[in-house]
Length: 63
Image 1 (tube, rainbow, N blue to C red):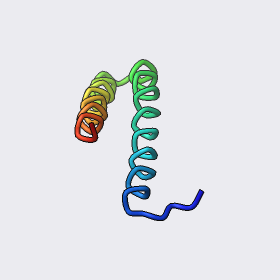
Image 2: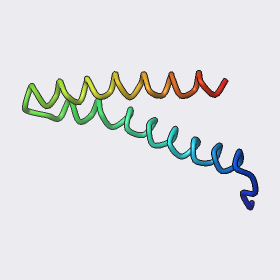
Image 3: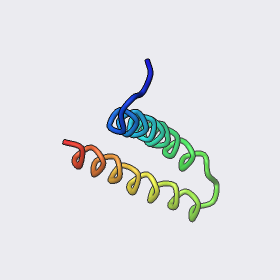
């Protein structure tokens, strides 16, 4: 399907970003559990919270 309008391109790009963010929310908890360094594990957990907030804000803005 050809993307012909700026809106179509934006929606397609937003979908890609959303997919990437969802994938990282699945990986970060595993990385935190696997980490033997407490500071690194905490950084993964912190990044997970930040990423979840970004997903929520992105979706709310589009509604």
